[in-house]
Length: 404
Image (cartoon, rainbow, N blue to C red; front, side, top):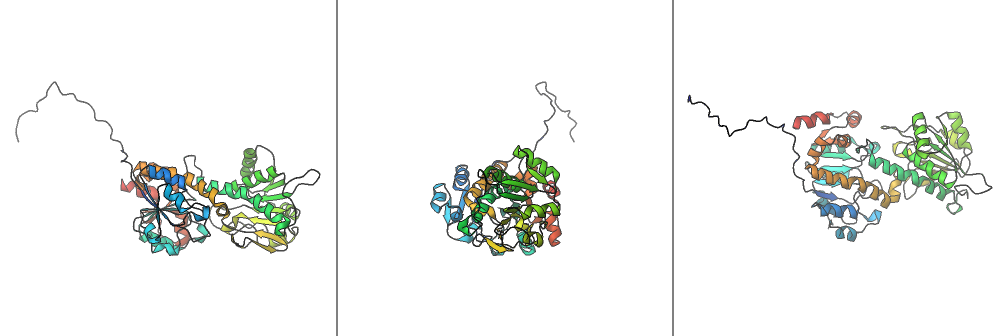
C-alpha cells in the first residue's frame, strides 16, 4: 500500500450530498384492449371515443373489439376516427397488456387472459366465483375494481356516478309503469293543482336515495325517506337544502307508509354481503294494487322479501297486485350516459398510470389507488374475497414496500 498522502487542492470544494429521492421513471406507452361484453346484460363501454382520442394523442395504442360500443350507440367508425384500431378477433384483444372491461371477468374470459396482464373492471361481489380468482392468481394478474377505486377526496367516483344515474332513473322508471300505457294505475307521478301529490317511500338515504328524493321532489311528489343511519338522513337533508320527511327503520311506521304509497324504492345495501330485507311479504300484500316497487339493492339480494331478479328485456313481474321492478344493473339501461361517467374517471387515471411509468409505480405513489386493487401480480390483496373463498391474503402495502 502506498504511503503517499492524499493531495488536497484548494480548488476542491467539499459539500454535503443531497438526499436521494425516489425518482419517477419516464412515462410508459400503454397498449390498451377494450373487448365487447356479452355477460351481465352489459351495454356500457369503459372508454368512449372522445377518451380514446385523448389516449391516442398521448401516444398510447388502443384496440377495440368490433361492435364493442354498440350497446352505448357508439359505432366502430366513431372509434376508428378517434384513433383506435378495430379488431374482429376476441383473442387478439385479450393479448393487450392492459384490458379495460365494463363487465366483470367471467369463466369464458379465463382461457384468453395473458400472464402478468393488468385488468380494470367491475367485480360484482355477489356473482364472484372462487375458480375465477384462482385462475387470475395463477396468471399473476394485477386487477383493479371499479367499486373500490378511490379518488383524492376519499370517495368512490365510479360507484357514485352509477348511483347518481340509478337514483335519477328511478322516478323515470316509476312514472313509466304508473302510466295507463303500461297497464299501470294511470297515475301521474308528481303534483297537479287540486290533486294530492303522489306518495313515494324511499328506503335508504345513500346516494341512490338522495338522487331519487331529489327527482321525486322536483316532480312534485310527496317523499318519505327511511334509513337506520341518522347521520345519513341528516346529510341527505343538508345536500337537498330542504327538510324532507325522514324516519329510522321502524317496522310499524314503515308498514303504515307503504300501505298508502304509489312508489316504494329499496336502496339499502351493506358494504359487503347481502342487503338487509326490511319489507316483509305481509307488508307488500297490504300495499295498494297497481303501486310499484323498485328494488335497486337486488344485485345484493334486495330489501323486499318478494323481490326476484329480473332483466332489462323482462323488467317487471306482479305479485300481490304490486308491480316489482328488480333489474340489477339500472345504469346499463342508460348506457351512453353511464359510459361517459365511467370514461371520465378512467381516462385521467390511465394517463396518470402512464405518467407514473406504469401501474406498479402508480401504486407506489398513489395510496387511494391501492384501495381498488384486489389482485397484485397474482397475490390476492382483498381481505373480504380471501375470507369468502378461504384464499391466501397478502397485504398490498407490505407487498409494495418489499419490492422497492
